[in-house]
Image (cartoon, rainbow, N blue to C red; front, side, top):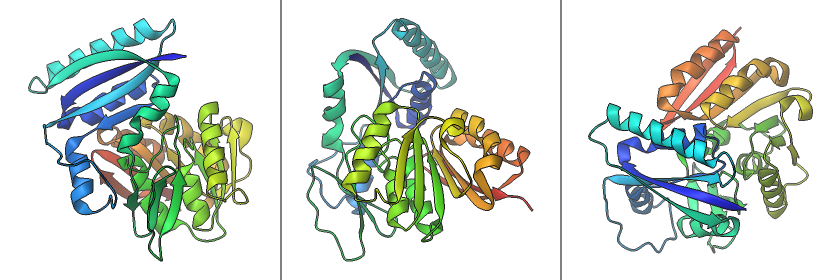
Length: 309
């Protein structure tokens, strides 16, 4: 199968908005190359191992979306073009350039690996790509990972927000539902903290990747990965429900929380671009959930919610 890689160079302030456009088009993969973020990781010491050399700041980011070259491609490209024109009208000072090329599936699955390096998240998590070597510290919780074509390397703000929250919330013995598991990184992290996890995803590619990563991390006794949606796969209630997806999908999931989340349980919602957060918060309140905490990282929001008394 061939894919059209559409690369949009945009002023750094607009990277989240452009990424959201790709997600709205149903892109199964979106990547952001942000020199300033890369430089901040290197200078902060979050990346203990890197070989990028001198990083030049350009004031722009490159947001790449991947669209299947099928009968829907032209319509989606036209929708993207119109949406980008609207962004330029709203923000005329932004740099906005677009280019596209055809890539084969195997190229897409491997070309980004140069940007995925070992990274520390929170107090103890050390995310280690399978092809990298590290020297762990005594208290490190290593998450061995090969995301393949599934979302979730841990370096994106949405995933790192979740990992930091899991480190604080998860207690040994709790049950967790991971909705839209992607690479399985959150399910694996929770399992290594002592949780019992049911992880689901609609994408068969993501399910395969997640199962491989569960096996790689030797947490198969604590994590079960299945393909399907809430109604067809999950039964019972969990102490913690996590959805690191996008705002539109989270809005659709919220009405189902009454069935799958225990009365004393908590819901973590991430993958929400900051300007969509009020909409999600309103929907949570509408269905009886109070927002207990709101975290923001690089324009992305994580909401922690629990049932109101």
